[in-house]
Image 1 (tube, rainbow, N blue to C red):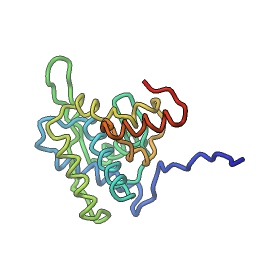
Image 2: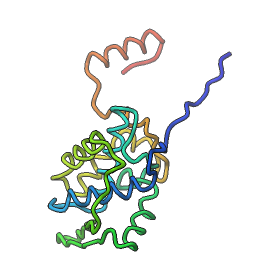
Image 3: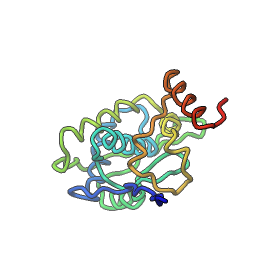
Amino acid sequence: MTEFRRPQLTTRIPLPGEQDRLKQMILYIAERCADAERFGFIKLNKILWKSDFDAFAARGVPITGRDYQRLELGPAPKEIPRVYNDMLRDGAIRVEEVDFGDDIVEKRTIALDHPNLKLFSPEDIAFVDAAIAYYWNMTGTETSDDSHGVAWKTHNNGDPLPYELARLSDKPLSDNALGRLRERARASGWRTS
């Protein structure tokens, strides 16, 4: 009998510059989003997540390579609280509170240092720019809701989110694909609805 082995999933990918990659991406995203109507901490986390996971899905290599975890408001780099606080302490960023009324106060990240992009390829930057464009007109709530796909729904708060989850799709199956699955289920003796 063949023993089932759980596949090894990738939660961190060592890349040149390691932790500095996250810092430089925070600076880059904050600089690029300076004129966005909405750009709070939630949106920053979702841009980082989308950039990393879209890059991994497309080419097998993320942008920052950092660990991600499931949080109530969506995926975020596990070490972002520490890195973010270090950047505040070192004067690389500051936080500006913007009151939108109705008890909505956005904590906007303002870059005080320019990002050093020497660790990133033009392709890396293209993935980040695409994530920024994707979320540009969304509020924090909308970006959070958008990130609550199958990868997020299948985990609990605090769980690591392996990069392989980027290959899961939230798109509904086509009628043709559903038909093939139902036929396989019937052939295997499974009940289908």
